[in-house]
Image (cartoon, rainbow, N blue to C red; front, side):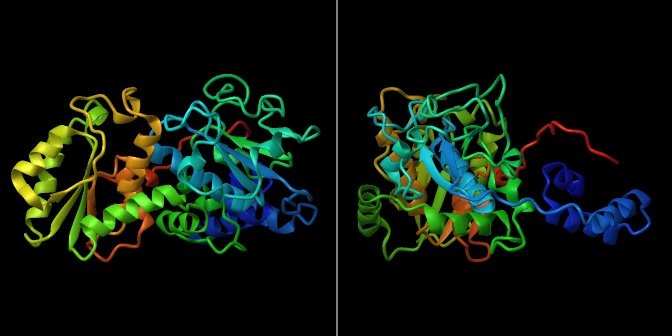
Length: 373
């Protein structure tokens, strides 16, 4: 199937790789053998050649939770690496974490991912765009047929062999979806999702000076020099999504109680109900940032009483502080916990997820083409 998809996408090198791998696993399958032979004999077929000249990838805001948006950016950065495009971000008015100024909200928290600016895009009067719902005239628009209509819900696979000057990604993609399509010439070829995310974050994801100063100050005053278990407990709007959330909380206690009772607990949670439970059980062992939290099932990122940039800084700090702790326990159904589990190469048994990481879950897509068998 991977070989057939590669054939549809014009990815000749991967087509050969996957057909030959399939044949080695099932050498008696006549269909696979014929396809593999056809590929080897197709001297007229050539690998997709990237067009010459500067090509760009604009990464729009996904428009949901902070680390969901950041993980979309990281996947798009991998897409840029694979396709030879220069990346740039635009978290516009649909971002839940903007400052209202109209500037790229991503840069409120992180350094730019490249030297290209949004103004450079609007100046490209003769540029071609993919999907073609975009143009120089509407490139800064927050939402454009994201969910319905032509060019909606475009997955990462469709960007792999596009010749247009500017490609625009506004629908969520994941690093795990792109792993099979990393060229053998790229150093990330064959790496796991976690190793790829760490590589991308090290290269591109740099907290800006003000955010870095805040997290450094908290770490110095509260965590430095102390054996600390970071514990992320997601409540609020996760309650309706997860029927087993309360039993899961008891599992946190069971794991913490197995550890050294002198260890500090750095608690990351959006829910005051969990703060009270942890403080009742562990008292002064619990440390946490002075972040806004909810008393009910309303997600903090949807609470309009909180200044959006403050929300973004708080959840950004929590992740980077957890990465400085010696151990971590979290719920993989949360983007925050899933990200923490992957952005650090934890010591054996130092990282525990109480549900599988959502960042390892592949997107299911419908291929708009005919697969020949």
